[in-house]
Image (cartoon, rainbow, N blue to C red; front, side, top):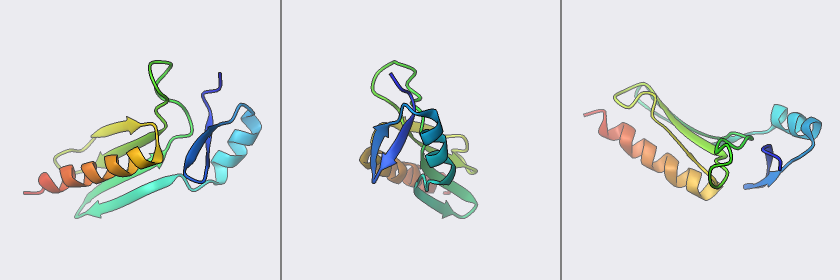
Length: 99
């Protein structure tokens, strides 16, 4: 089973061909969402690799917070829709840490 994925629109699709995956990965826009709140950067991206390591559904998207009270915060999920929701939660978390 392949642990490499590309996006077909907003839908992850397994890609068993390493060369095809690498070519896609090299030029793809993998950004789901990005926000800056003051000096705090919140980023959500498509990883292209399954980070579940065989334990549950594939974890293909990652949200991180850089800076502020929640620096280093990280969450992963399986779908674009989950990633958008996860990003919104991280933005709220970052805003709550500014007070």
